[in-house]
Length: 210
Image (tube, rainbow, N blue to C red):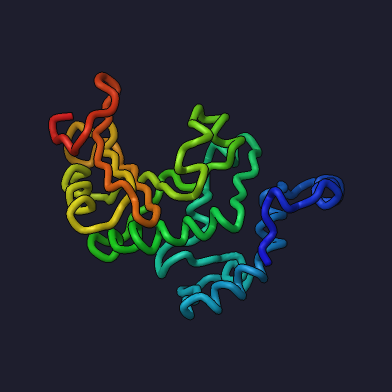
């Protein structure tokens, strides 16, 4: 069974902090769960790590879909800079897996490789960046992204026409690859499309002129 941040007791955290001074609690968490994730990956649809990763990297890699990993879905420069543990629970991991399978992987299959700019956010990270604790990012249900070379409006329209999403937001778009896309997934979602800009805030529908 995977260990969640909430399930890690104070004694374990104290041991980590006192015996692994050069290691953050977050990296300790990944290392402690590596074998469990490796076993889960093996048992989940037979998806295996690919490429020329080292043995250690393969053990630390948990694939949520053929091309998206747990590690990239929780990566945060702010968390790394401030030493914030951005550690998801098992429920959050399962929601990220659904998000990757239903939203991110189909986009990748259609348009090619891209990077997620923001995925899961722990409560502490939400506070640090001024995000709502009720955000779907905090539940592992949402991601922000853009695809290099693809107009974000065109990408949002493709998602709207082809995928079963919960909420789709075209954010800060002024043409081409500007701004980014926020998209969330839950089963039987709202299929809500919005446009956001700093002047007008949120408006319903996808709007190319903002």
